[in-house]
Amino acid sequence: MSQPVSPPPTSNHLETVVSKKREFSWQVAANLFVSFKYAWCGISYAFQTQRNFRIHVVICVLALGLSIFLRLKAVEIAVISITSGLVLALELLNTAIESVVDLTVKQTYHELAKIAKDCAAGAVLISACVAVLVAITLLFPPLLALILSAF
Image 1 (tube, rainbow, N blue to C red):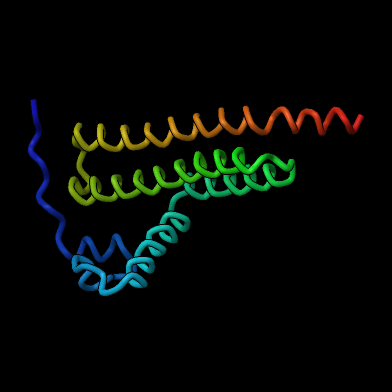
Image 2 (image 1 turned 90 degrees about the vertical axis):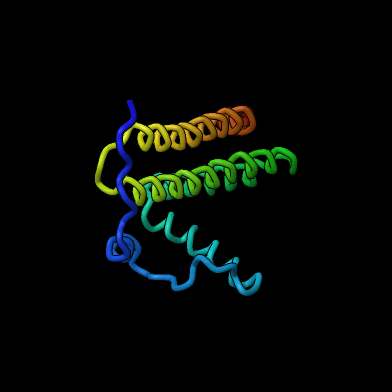
């Protein structure tokens, strides 16, 4: 049985959710620089407000740093970069989906909102697990060889 959906939030509610109001955000960006500026605002927002995004960024930097330190092949570094980038991109999409769902249902519970949020989080989890498997596959053998050569 479906439950009634809450009406859209008022503009006062929106102003409290986002501290920096962006006028005319519904319009197409005037130029490419403005588009990149908006994209950077999204990345910056996620980094400042989303603990999991910060964790993923740190792990990504560590994995890439370790890849370079272990002198992995360029293809292997590229694979680690792509899987790490995918995790970060999905974390940004998860944040966007959660924000839109919260905007729609406000402070009420709705089963479809739960499904949307859970599925978005599940996508991040799957990508993170794949990234861990890729990192283990590519980083573990040379790291083990380095450790064994030290003894």
